[in-house]
Amino acid sequence: MTNRLPEDYKLKESTGWNYFKITEESQSFRILTSPIIWWEYFREESDGKVKPVRQKEEFNGTPADSKEWNKPKEFWAFVIRNHNLKKVQIMEITQQSIKKEIIKYAKDSDWWDPKTYDITIYKTGKWKETRYSLTASPKSKFADVDEENAAIEESKKVALDALWTGDDPFALPF
Image 1: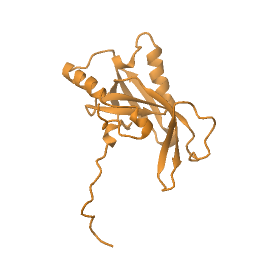
Image 2: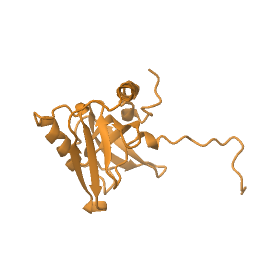
Image 3: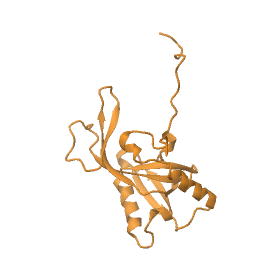
Image 4: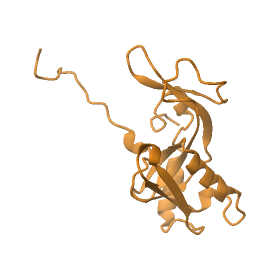
């Protein structure tokens, strides 16, 4: 066994920062695209890695190869602008409480389209005690028009459909 890395080794670049992670700190974001919606569960591959299985229609029951702890869930994904990081990211949601809050605002005639206002998300607790709450800010444009235009243009370069195939939505050419 050697103590060094192979000479041709190249570290893969992490794209995790392209995905919104809900933390215990309040986070403000603006939804920039309509969501894609699918159903998802995770299964263990022969190499021991756990991989998502996705389809556009609801699964009929729990698939036999689903991890015991993971029943199929409805899954939303859309492009957002994370105001805390000043970055365009993908937000993926399976949590019912978050989806219900977004739907509540989207159906309210005072709010309607979530692409026209900022949302702040709050997380408390851990594991099964985790709770989420959302607060919408009054409808507004971005404080900086150039920043808004840049975020909208950048969101157009994110290929959400790449999530179906496991490709990187930020790496596909347009």
